[in-house]
Length: 333
Ligand SMILES: [Zn+2]
Ligand SMILES: [Zn+2]
Image (cartoon, rainbow, N blue to C red; front, top):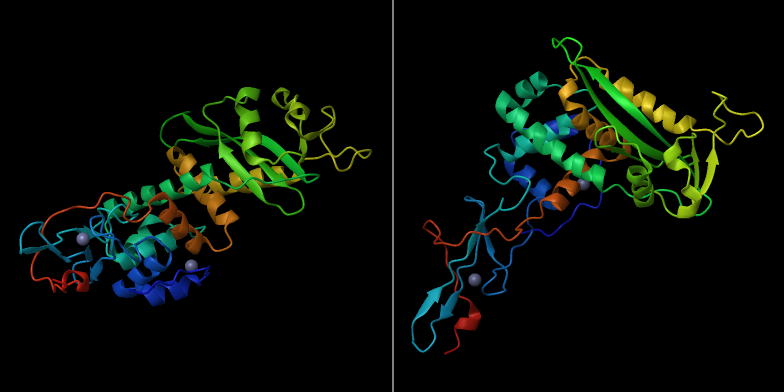
């Protein structure tokens, strides 16, 4: 089995479609290169590498061991499915469809109908895979890298995303989000808040999680930000009475984070966006926007969230026939 790990790829949308459509073996290799599927499996009993059986997608040990105090030997029965513990655990979707589905899902404009037709999968399966994918990006959202650093200007702000639910009168779906952006590099983080709590008790821990100490934070005069200096930040507050950049302090503004909010609101306003899925759209949008190589990053994230062979290996005899090879160490009598 090849041990190559992809260090970073950015294949073109149409290249992915043409390369992987109907190509299960190629797709499995792709998933292995990105750590989604195991590149090797070690037998927990023998502490030695397992062999891979391609036709059944099973890793097995099968080493011959001496039975203590007898002259008899038995073979190790450890085996585990290739998908155990992984992003693909329990799926019946063919590997190439998984790769293509994710590729579709990571496009700014995607819809179920196109995917269902293009890949040939059921609506139910498509709905399932959408939530599996969301799980990956929502997890990524919680583990974003921190930004800022000594002297680095970071703009912060909160905003309310609202979407009216169709056919349900005046009912609204809404989520408060909080975020920050480095003014120069445009590196950013955005996190959804629980309910409408924008108190210091909620926001200060997030600031400490995502913004490095010593950063120069620009914000409006929201009360929760009042004590930022006590937490190791410089703090520039926008003059509240002015709704534009103060000519005397042109560097005190939050125009960059406001632009992020505008883009985000534009994105969730698109037709077809269901209000119930605001959180999902948020993480997908930010993932696509933040990653230079979304497909590569996505599968790397999926591998981190579902590390292969996460200890749920099954034990039991393998379906015959299994080509058993004798372990050389058990040959010495
Ligand atoms: Zn890659
Ligand atoms: Zn073994």
